Length: 73
Image (cartoon, rainbow, N blue to C red):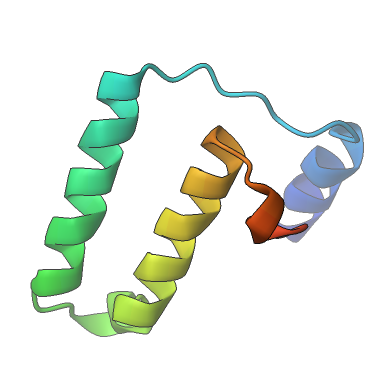
């Protein structure tokens, strides 16, 4: 399995492009907000509130870059 993953990473030199609508983005944000509030078990405990907030912010900066955000990508 490790070889497959390495091969996949090496084939993709360009960043991935996603075509999301604002509705898609809103659904993802709502899901992230909900996910912060639920009890997580097992390996999912690593996705704490801080980590979810960082993901939320990263998505926002990619959608609407801001001069104040600097190079956060």
